[in-house]
Amino acid sequence: MHQVMALALPEVVAFDLSMAAQIFGHEQERDTYRFTVCAPRPGSVPSTTGFAIEATADLAALEHADTVIVPGYAPRTAPPEPVLAALRAAAARGTRIASVCVGAFALAAAGLLDGRAATTHWQHAEEFRARFPTVRLNPDVLYLDTGSILTSAGITAGIDLCLHLYQRDHGAAAAAAVARRMVVATHRPGGQAQFSRRPLADIDDRLVRTCDWAIAEMHRPLTVAHLARHTGTAVRTFTRLFHAEINMTPMQWLTSQRVLEARRLLEATDLTVDDIAHRCGLGSAVTLRTHLARELGTTPSAYRRTWRSPRHADHG
Image 1 (cartoon, rainbow, N blue to C red):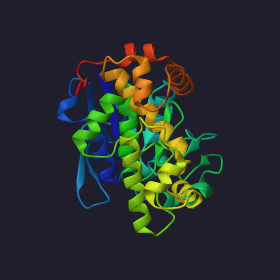
Image 2 (image 1 turned 30 degrees about the horizontal axis):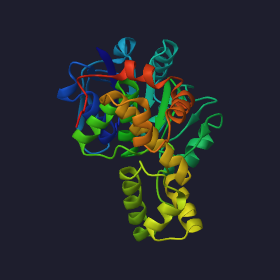
Image 3 (image 1 turned 180 degrees about the vertical axis):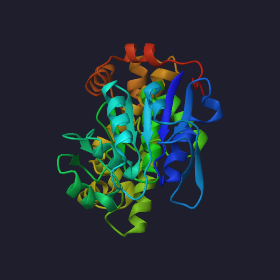
C-alpha cells in the first residue's frame, strides 16, 4: 500500500489539496493508495477559502510516507522549523516529495530545491527568485520532475503533476483511465506553458482543435505544414504561436504524444512492437526503441512486462 501524505499548512489552499485527494484518495484507489492529511498538529487547519480542513495526523506521519504532497498555503512565509525538519528528514529517507503551486515556497525554505530546477505559480516568480536565488526557477512550465523532488504551477497544473506521479507508479494507460474518470485532459506534458502570452482566443481555440486532430491522426506522417494548414495559418506563424502556447516545437510535442500512445498500447494491447510503432506514426520498432531508451531507459518488451496490468487493460 503506497502511503501518500498531504501536508496541510495553515492556511492551506483547499483546491490544491483536493486535487491530490481526488486522485490518490478516491474510492477506486483504496487497494492502491492510502491517502492521509497531516499537519503540524492534528485537527482543524484553516484554508484560504473560508472553511477548515481536518488533519488526522501530525508530522510524525511523514516518517511512513512514500509520497509527500505539499499544497499551496498563505502567507508564503517559511513554515515553522519542525515542519522544515520533517521535510528534510523525509527527503533524506528518499521519500518522493511534490509541491503544488506556492507549496514550492515550503520546499525551498527547507533547502530541498537548492541547485535544482523548480517551478511555482508565475505570479509569484519574482518573489520566489528574490528569496531563493540558489533555485533554478522556471515559471514557464506546468511541472518539473527532478526525480525524488517535483514541483508544479498553480490550479490545474497540480492535476497534471498528480497524474504524472500516478503514471510513474502505474503506467500511461492507468493514468489515462484516471484522467477519463476525472474528465480532464491527458496530453499536457510538464514542459507546456503555464499560460498563453497572447490574448488571441480564436488562435488558442484553433491550436486546441489542431492538437486534438493531430492526436487522432498521429498514425499519418504529419509535418508542421500539415498542422499549420489545419490551424489555418502560415508555417512560420503557426510555429511561433505553438511554441508560445505549448513551450515546445510542434514536432517535439507530436513526438511526445506518439510515445505516450505507444506506451499506452504496450500496456493495454497485445499488438506487436512494429504494429504499435506504425499505429503511433513512429515508423518502425527501431524508432520506438530509440525513444523509449532515451526517455525511460528501457525497451518496449521490458516496459510491457513492467506495466501490463489487467486491472487497467483497455482492449477496446
